[in-house]
Image (cartoon, rainbow, N blue to C red; front, top):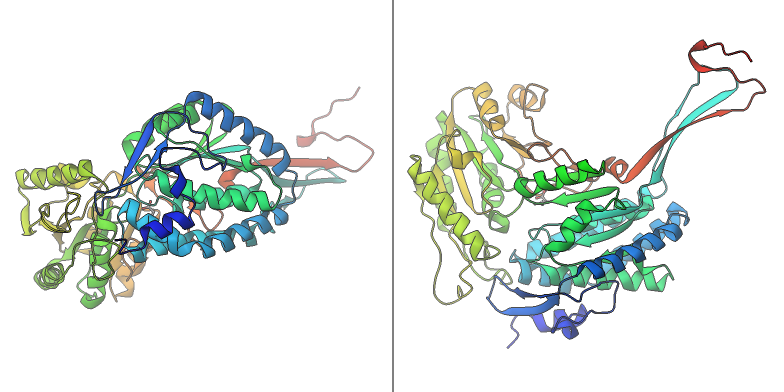
Length: 511
Ligand code: UN1
């Protein structure tokens, strides 16, 4: 019985035949150890994927370097046309790919489809960008001279992505990199390798249809490849999404060889609930933020900082909402909350609750691991709410699970200080109808995060804005706005169209 049409989806995505780890023939090099991918939704084995050896990595890099020589010469709008076709292909595969994301990663089908939608959106964005990629012109201090700057592709871009957005984050990087004239080598999370192979199949088909080198998109699997990328001088830019702990290692390793990085690391995102907030709006923002994707987004709401005058009311509303949450198979649209990615994540969740209790936290909605029918994978947990203090060690950390810490404040300045009082700086939000509070929160004396929202939760950013954050979040920006600049090198050009050669700064050098 294939209640949710998984087998059909695997078939459509060309994943049926890889079961013993054989490559699908798209530009994916794998002769190493087998990685088994289990669904956290059901505990079933979905498929086996072979990881890449050092030799496989070298073979992939060879195709990438060769492809770059060809790809950079294709005019940017023509590259954009190929990315447009990738967007079309993703539209065609949205249903099966969204389903696979849900099945392999464990987020709800709605969110799986939403993730593929983000991929489609970034393709559209990149197509428009392919006719822009603007540089500036400036005025030279010398007569009959012209100055301008232009942006050139970097070369091979390494993309190391996380399990929680197994397809979208790669596309934010790769689609921009491709219109910029770069080629990509992708090391996906070893927890979601099938999603990566599915994407690679889709993209390779488009490249083949356009008679473009497949090395434009390379896939390597397994953690060994991650370090090969970080240490590889042939890779001028590494875009890494994952934990702060690993991000610190990536940052050091790549900096050591003067490579560039885009780092998207941990968040510790808070919502401030003001006494001027519309509590019914807070409800959707906070509950989706905290329990959506089972609390496994970088942007998930981890802390709720509530004004003392509306504290009890807010807690009651939340308790009531948590009581109605349906937890179960993410492919079943009746459920709100799916599983955590694996048992390791379940342990982290349990440990965090334990630590919060030891530090004096007060349980408001009890957590726990679910057992019995439908919960055979052992990865389903109950979203919980803990009354805590911002300075608790555990509150200062990012736990990738549906644990929401609530705390009280009395002045808006105090609330902003609490919101900023963590090592991370990704996303933040305030619910208020008071213009002064809102503007203070958005001002230079307000939120120190890369994302600051008003009357919207912390998660669910649109692709049109630059995505990323400050402090231990790593400082990188991806996706919209002018994030493309990180994928290109800037060149300043001065041209003398006169017959004399005056030096800058008025220096005389007569020969
Ligand atoms: C992530 O969790 O790595 O803003 C990315 C959001 C999504 C992306 C999250 N658009 O929640």
